[in-house]
Image 1 (cartoon, rainbow, N blue to C red):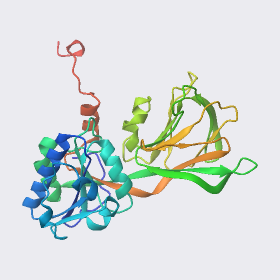
Image 2 (image 1 turned 90 degrees about the horizontal axis):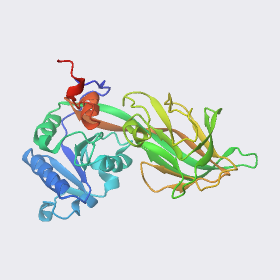
Image 3 (image 1 turned 90 degrees about the vertical axis):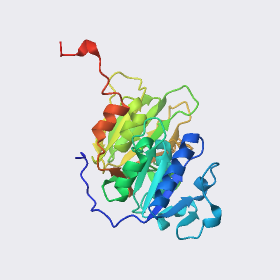
Image 4 (image 1 turned 45 degrees about the vertical axis):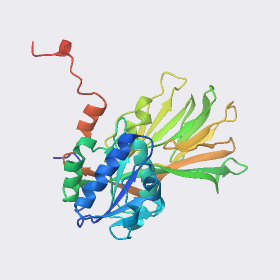
Length: 324
């Protein structure tokens, strides 16, 4: 049994299946074509976004596009036409899908053609079996929350105003970083309007539980079970031996200000997308987004098994064997 609590009842059978992928690997095209063949064999409606349809090598008969059994739509419109979206690629492809599908109430299933694949958890060699089980109603449906950030202008007293300079949304993490500079950033952190610390570091990663196994993990952050309502703050190379990652409630309001003595240009980015500058007279505000993403897992999925296999927890060394 999965270690996820299925908070969503089983839905009616999926009939309109969206297919998304990203160009770059022959293996992705191979899996996309295998998926399309499977869906055709089940007589399901297939909806492909324009970017995926344009990938070289896709087995699409454009003469058969009838708007019923085969339809091509803009990626931003996928949520309006599908009951389920299946993404072929790595976690980067899943993050792209999340930015489109969040808030649509359409679940997303990932077939892993990347490196780790914490979000895309179906192995390509199990495509027929696992996708078939999902289409037969054997799956877990879980809700992942997202973070939003806003860079706002401060007033003359240094308090944040309603003037938004830049904003974005992240499924994994929001990262304050120094861009191309080799200097540390001098910044102040507040949570729910309470002073937390002034920090000299290469930056700060603010991650969801989903993102705790991504960049935050590389920076020494904790692994947080995806069902927890929590936010993790992980300093990047802090200039102190006492700095540690901090886990707070998902309802917390986070505010970051750059200190007047800072010597470099801080940047802020969400899920690896293009970053925006954060100036001394501005405030970075981070909070839970009001939209969520529905992720669909096969019934056999286990978060802990994913950790064991993808993070090499199951490596066995004879020198530690107790069998002797």
